[in-house]
Length: 339
Ligand code: NAD
Ligand code: UDP
Image 1 (cartoon, rainbow, N blue to C red):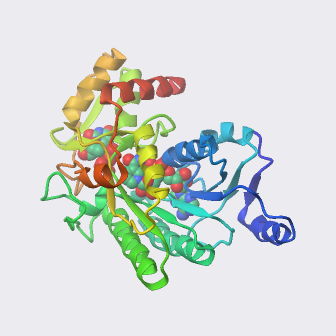
Image 2: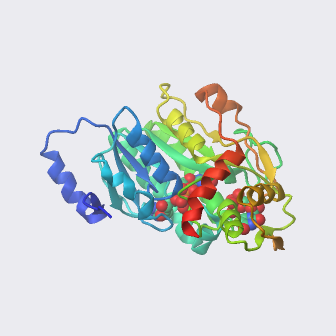
């Protein structure tokens, strides 16, 4: 791959010193943490394609992200990559920050729960310090997991959630809740312009086929005619948003002209499916002969999840457009390269 604009964090200080003595760039600089991951790579591409001609810096420690996701972006002179862990501070002069760095799949965020918590909490503080220093608007990729196993359905932003603070999911759920709290304190104490989005299950190309989330698992299993692993009864529900729709929501939120709008705001597809319906959809679209097998339900697995997106409709004029069968078809085409 071309890596002429690939830096590690120790090179960044030197680069900053050099840049101080150069005429300033015309382009606005956008930092995307977690930029080599599933959502981050789509966001970087979208930003590079926008008429504003942003300079886009992807920052990632490659914990779950893959350089392959961003390889095509190096064709664009306005794109660069920094290998860095958000747990450690960094100083880069930027105009906007999207903070996406964090493993999102339960098997990955549970593998090293202390790392997950540190990523959520120290990552938030380090990126907010940067936002404060350069007065840069900062968007936080929060999650529907802040609602836990919800008693209010669909979930509205005012619902405070039902989260187990000591379970196997709490490193992520409580880490993201703590990050939201830190975001709002930086906003109240230091006037940092924050944008908090609560993302509901999102899927699409560039997901890691071994990521462990339900859509990647079911599609890979169906394409290989292996058993489809349904955890529990399969009657638990999720609401699946196609990645292009979600990224449009990120852009609408970040570049909304009303600077005072902080969120939190739900971004997700309000169409709800249970996992048996999802398995059937994927089996039909892949023409697979796989059979469904039941496996143990993981601890604290939420029973239902569906966003109320009234606020996103009203404040951003945003709603998802892509139907599940169309998004799944695109995703199947992507995963076929891994068979
Ligand atoms: P992903 O695992 O594909 O991407 C996360 C990226 O962050 C990876 O590239 C990973 O290497 C990087 N990363 C992790 N820890 C890091 C650290 N300490 N320092 C630097 N980089 C680090 O997951 P995704 O689906 O793209 O999720 C992106 C963000 O969106 C995450 O913050 C996640 O919590 C949030 N989110 C995603 C979904 C979803 O359905 N995809 C739902 C809710 C929230
Ligand atoms: N799930 C499943 N089979 C799998 C992977 C996940 O039945 O192979 C279930 C999981 O228990 C949960 C739902 O699918 O009920 C969504 O899981 P995912 O890991 O995608 O994300 P979550 O929404 O739980 O964070």
